[in-house]
Length: 409
Image 1: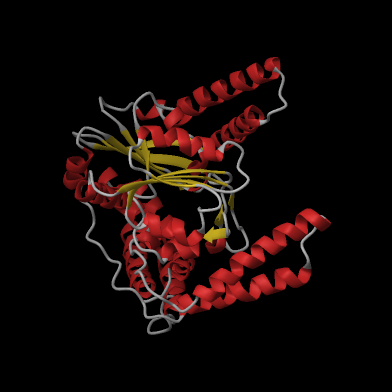
Image 2: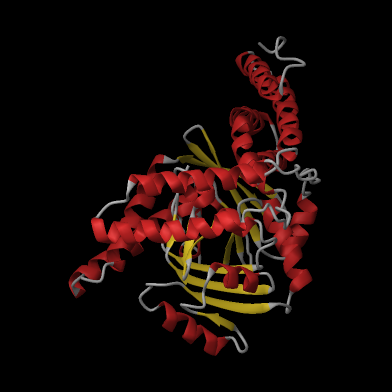
C-alpha cells in the first residue's frame, strides 16, 4: 500500500504514509514511523493551505489523526519532551493557522433570509410544539448555498508557520507555565514548559477524568436550577467543590508545577469542558495550541490599550440587559447594545474595532453542521460562519452564552 500510493492523489498518499508508519511500528523502528508521519503531515499541510474555507481545512485535518497518533507514540517512547511538544503542535489546531480574510461572497441576502427563517422556525416550535419539515428543508438549502459560496473562493495563503522554539515560548510566558495535554490511546499525558526546562508527565488512564467531568457538570447544572431548595443547593455546591478537588488531583497536582505567576493550559478533546480556572489558585489562560496562544499574546502587545469595549445583550435572556448595564459602570464609554438594537449587523460592526466584547445571549451548538452554531441576537442567529468573515476577533471575548462549553465532535 505504501508503494502503490506514491504519485497518487493526496488522500491516497496519506493512507500510504499510514501504511509505512505501521510497518515501522510493527518492527519497532521509531525512525521509520516518524519519517512517514512527518512526510504525511507535511503533505497534508500543503493540501490544507490550498483549501478555501476554515470548514474544509478542519475536515481535512481529520485525515491526519492516525499519523499524529503514530508519531506521538514513537516520540513518547524515544523522543525528548521538547520533541513531544513540537509534535503536539503539528497536530493541534492546525486548521486555525490561517485567519479568514475579510471578503464579500455575495451571500448577504442569504444570511438575512437564514435569520428570518430561523425566527419562523422558533415561532412555529412555540405555537405548534414542533418544527415544520418545509421550513427545515428551506433552512438546509440556504445553509448549503452559503457553505458552497465559501468553498468556491480562492484558497488562503500558506498556513505554515515556523515551529515555536522552547526559548521563544519561555520568553513569551514571562514567568508563567504552559501545560499542553494530549491523549495517547486511553492514557493522558502532558508536557510542562517552565522557565528552566520542559518535562513530559504521564498522567495515566483518562477514564477517571472523564467520570469526574461528568459528575462536576451535573452538579453545576443542579446549581443553575432555580427551583432548588436551600439544602439541595448546599448539597450540590458540596458535590461541585468535591469534583473540582478531585479533578485538580488528577490533572494539576501530578504535574508538580514550578513556581509561577500564572498557568497557560492547552487541553485536548473532552478536557475542553473542564473549568480550568477553578482548579488552580493562580490566573489561568486556556488556548487551542501553544502557537495560537503565542500569536494572541503578540497581538495583545500590538493592540494593548486601543480599541473599544462592546457590551451586548441578546433577546429573551433573564437578566441580560441588567448584566450589561452593570458592566457599563466598570467600562466608561462602552458601546452597549441591547434589544432591539443588538442586531447581527450592528454587533458585528461594533466587534470590528473592539478590544473587549461581552455577549450575554442564548447560544446554540449544531452537531449536524457546526459552522452554523450561533448566538441569538435581536434579529436572529449570528453564526460562526458569518463571524469568521468579519476578520480578526477582539482580543478578549466573554461569551456568557448557553452551550458555549458544549462538546461537539
